[in-house]
Image (tube, rainbow, N blue to C red; front, side):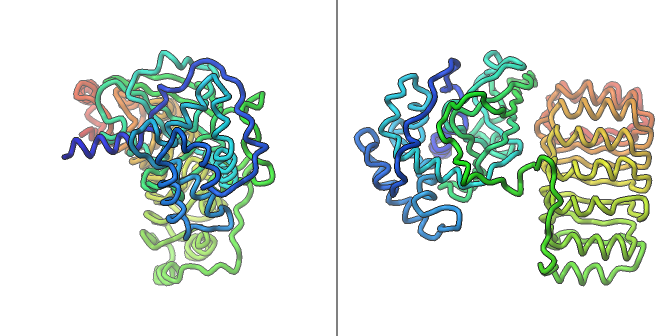
Length: 489
């Protein structure tokens, strides 16, 4: 029974790890659909019925499901075209996304003609969704490192399904934790978050458009069958897909990373969470104000900064487990200077990401007051670690740093080890536990920290992806440096 369920799940999410179907060679541009009219879904799929005989039934289902999803962005037919793409049925080779991607990856461009109406509707729908600039993940249960060489440029010709949740890929239905497998860490600039319109919203699906090009930043053998390949989306010098994103409908998400960064605008008439107001009011000045799990959002941050930091001069501010994004952190960063006695800042469990951390760089680098910074579960990647390196190298007061439950890899730990070993004399506590991308490839970096840091006293690196052999290697130098307490369960 469990095996049958696993097989169903693997078939359902096949599109997340079909990279092995991507051709290595360069193909002709994808065109012809751009001149087609936008038609209802039933008409758009009519040319496909001859080779996808069940598609009419599934088109009916998704249109019914999408009747209550009409927004100012998408029509019912546009939303339904996305949902239809995420569905699967048997036989699997007569499923829409399998057949479409097989055709997009084919050298015979004439095979795309029956798809033109659907592609026009589908790509129009995607063009109305905001571009995302963030890190996403994809994988395949094979060693693909020999096909991806550092600094090479590659093209994925099909639609590429990714997830923004690394834990999803580690389940047995996806890559699992054993056997040969390759994990792609992708910095995308034009990804589309289709989770709201997916038939399976829990998969956190980010879709990359066909003919997206990437630069290979690096390939790492993490040991135990895991290979990590880092990609960055790049602009194409030629048009490989016609009218991929119509200029008149292309928008940028508030989740994207602005270039240059604009100051977030929080409307003055937006109501502040009354629970936040009451909680702050009950605290005395120069104390730690606890707003943990108080539904604090970006619109509350002007009030929090004004009342907690500027008026009450709080010595600690606990903002854990709220919904503060990079925009809220921008507001906070404007007041984290030496004029206020804030010693402890807890941001654990807020989706601030690398962008939010970047707003703290200038403020915290020169701050001589802050002693504790908790950034666990804030969606930080190696890009965020680069910002932390700047903070740690310049800050002369930071003692405690929490980075657990993030998406830091062995590369990020190497950067941290270098700055902690060579440029910092104050940091005593470091936690990187539950960073599941950390493997034995980071053991030497941890050993460097233990041996070379002038101040480190506590190192927590539990529940990562270390082997028993890796843990043993790390314990040996620790025994020679007993002043550093090590937790590596």
